[in-house]
Image (cartoon, rainbow, N blue to C red; front, top):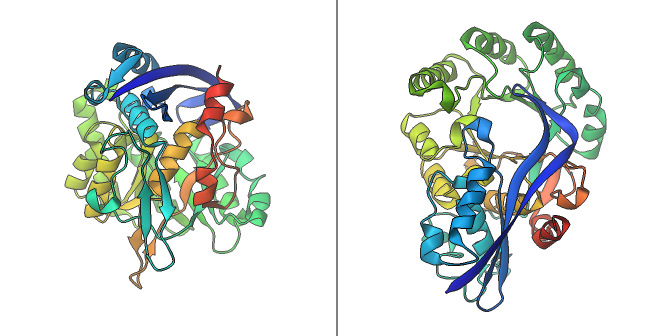
Length: 382
């Protein structure tokens, strides 16, 4: 089977710059891949790497897709190096784009996969073949992303009124003492029963992280995301020391810690499972080259997982959200599966709304995901 592979590179300004510990992020770069087989079946995928997380660059992904040429085959696509995780993800998503999970019949009690002909045996395997059990739920809660700093306070009331009960606040952006004081204001503004996720993007050292974890213990904080992080450019020894620090912090404080930037390299998930990570795994499917394999390992480990946006376009969002809807969730105290609120409350995101994902709402439904039209993003980039 031969495939025609095309790509379009994008550089899309955000509607409002995203402030993180890494500075102001003003635009998103990536590329959209379009695959068409000999029968005219078309699928789309997205490579949206984040180099300061330790991923490859967009230039590297673009060079990789050019190596494949205009016409390629399954063997060539399978040979894309593992370090080009974004490109591998884009190709896998494009091959699966013509495959839509559909609900079983009323008496079927499960989910079925409908596979378009001509895409090969690996385009969409039944869940039992890959060790996954698709969630029975048709919708999941969504966490609302708050702006950094004092600007976080303004949108809370309106988002609470619309139904959001989980909020994510970027910290590690301003003075630590000022943010610690502001934490109480943010918590006070939350609706009753709401939870707050804090995301430091690796901004702190040990003592700073400890101060935050001490403060979080008596507040409605669901978890503290990536308090410390060592970039690959800082060397293997610094990375090992930081990983030991994270494991130590996770064991010393009651507030769970979540890994995010630490989970984008080849084998990162498996390594942290092997280390016995007791906290949360924040999974950005768009950054993983082997999404299916990652889910199998996480499910086998009975891991606590949150699926999160990588601030990709609607093309990558559709693929990532389909992945999220495959997750059956954690078992609660009653033995019932529960899926944590999705970290996809980021839209409207781009100045060009044609490239956005689903409309921001406190819940996402399967039909919202399937309604996304990757070809519309492709056409918008022409």
